Length: 174
Image 1 (cartoon, helix red, strand yellow):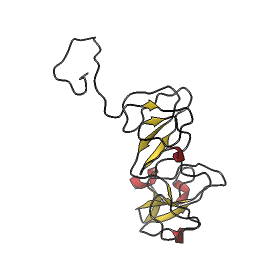
Image 2 (cartoon, rainbow, N blue to C red):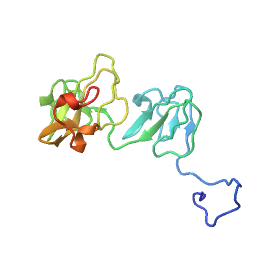
Image 3 (spheres, rainbow, N blue to C red):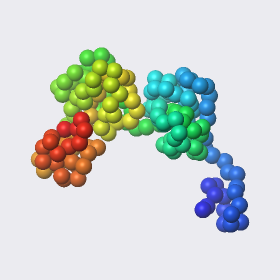
Image 4 (cartoon, helix red, strand yellow):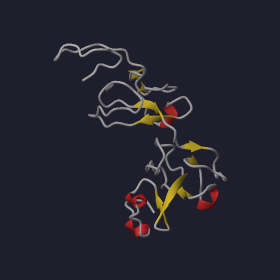
């Protein structure tokens, strides 16, 4: 495989060092005020910066962290950049955009096909089309697409044109 930033083919079977732009770095165990590709974060609140959220991995995982290089420390969690983070604009907000909260009903969401995704008390259920965990129990606006004249969550198979009503969508999707 080609070595990033290097020319030529090198010697088959040999390993090469190369410079990375965004290496995974552990700053502190249970860190706060973390930047991109830094850990160990426990929630989105530990990540400091616009559009930074915590990428959670299980204790044996070396899953790649979006936008970061390397595998980092097994089981550690890292902050990463996203274009769709969950953001709390105001408690009991109105005129909220996609991935913004805290909404209480669909009428709090402003925009075509935006609906309020209700999560239970303390729940970190994933919000369709949004990244990160947000704040437990807070509700966020999410976008549905329209297929076959029905509004469907854009993270489900429904948007492939298979939507025939809420009952065909999986999990908490409608």
